[in-house]
Amino acid sequence: MPRRKPHSGRNGDIMSAEEQQKLQRQLEQLRLEQGILHRLAHRNKNQHRRERWYRDMAGLRRGLARYLECVGGGGDKRSADELVSVWRDVHVGRWYRSFSQLVASSQFSPIGLVLLGCLARICRIVGITEALEKEKSGASTSVKDANGGDDDGDRIMRDVIAGFQSDDDDIGEIVERDT
Figure 1: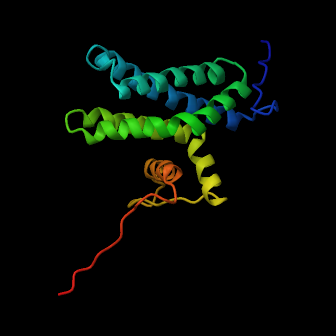
Figure 2 (figure 1 turned 90 degrees about the vertical axis):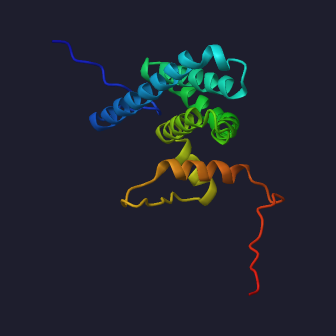
C-alpha cells in the first residue's frame, strides 16, 4: 500500500495528525455554514435579490466558497490567508451592519439572526475573531457565558462594533433623576 503524502500547513511545514484533524473539523463546520447560506439564498432569491442584505449574504456565500476551495481543495494557503485578511479589513463590518439592520426590521428579523450567527461562527473558525482581539488588546481575552464556556458570538460582535466606533461617536450619558 503506498504511503500518503502528509498535508503541508500554512507555512509549508508538515502538519501533525492532530492539526489535520482540527483542520478537518473546521472545514466540516464551514461546510455546514455554507449549506445554511445556500438554503437561505435559494429560498429568498426571488423576493429579496435586490435588497442590500441579500447582496451582502451572496458576497459572504461566494467568499466562503472561495475560502473552502483554497483550504479544502488543496489550493494555495496564502490566497486563503489573503482572503481572510480582506474579509477582516473590508467586508465583515459591512456584513455585520447589513445583517443587523435586517434584525432591526421586525418582518425579517429571524433571517437576520441566522445570518449574524453564521457570520459570527465563520469569523471564529477562520480566525478573524482572534485577530480582532489581538489587535484590540494585544492579548486574547475571553468572556464567559452563564455555563462557564466561551461566548464567541458575543465576543465577535463586540469586537466588530468596537472597531467601527470612532472617538466622536455619541454613546450617550447616564442621567439620574433627583427625587
